[in-house]
Image (cartoon, rainbow, N blue to C red):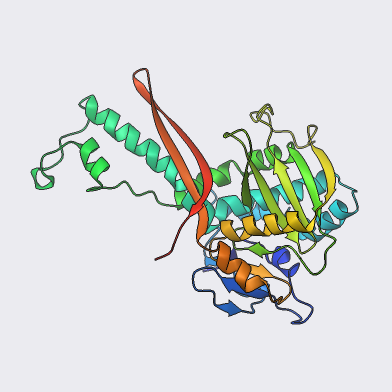
Amino acid sequence: MPLDHYVSQVHLRNFYSPALGELMYAMRKSDLKRFTPNAQSVCRIEDGSTNAYVRENRAIEEILKTIEPRYNSAIAKLIGDNIDQECIYTVAGFVAYVIICSPTGMRVFSEPIKAVAETEAVTAEKHGLLPLPPKELGGTSLAELLRTGDIEIVVDQKYPQAIGISQMLRNVAAFGNFQWDILINRFDENPFFTSDYPVAIEETKDWRILNRIVPLAANLAVRIRPNLNIDRKNVDFSFANFGRRIKHVSLKEIAEINELIVRCAGDSVFYRDDLAWIEKFIAKNRHYRIEPITHKIAQGKGTLVISSQRILPWRAD
């Protein structure tokens, strides 16, 4: 079975340490263990890109062939402010793929599906479309059993991945038609980190909108700022609505971005330089992760399910 990287090797190589050659520094949030991997040995899962729910079960790999070979060229174009359609497509594709195929992405997007399935099951029971639970479960209703946690609907995480794969190009077009901040880091002693989920979320004044902050290299990141007015039904790869502004970030902003990167990481944080302050910084921010937030609102005869994401305190134990 193939070992598929859910964070591309070409991305990770941009965080290699000059002191280590073809390696980078890494630390796990779960136990603060340090290690020095290469790009090939991390962020990979057996058959991670294989999905039996889609007609062509390796379809995502064909899309990646149009993205990964152009990654370093896209970085150079962003830094040089020479941004073209290929550059936008490449970066948007990298972001969309991480969200779809990483363990964190599949975990987070399983929750809305679970919430919808629970709502549909309770509604079906209410209308007499489901039999009563067996007496062994106390003879109570399905709604009550779900509420108390005596039974649980479990979502195969490959299912939200399949939905993401089917919408991959639509998401690439959406990201490419949003507004981007190109974040240039001029402070060599304070480089950007990356992680096993290098798509950090950033809250905005509008609860419906989450910015995505993506480190692309130790000296470069991008903030993708969604626009709810973009027509996402019509895929536009001319990226006519794309906008960008170049921003040279301050030391304070670098610290804030790295904080989000650590908090949103699944477990592993990767960095270029073995600096004295990094272990303490990761230790301070390790007990957080992205969590799905789902609200069920009664509306007429049905229920409206609204889902979002937030960075929340979390401990593996």
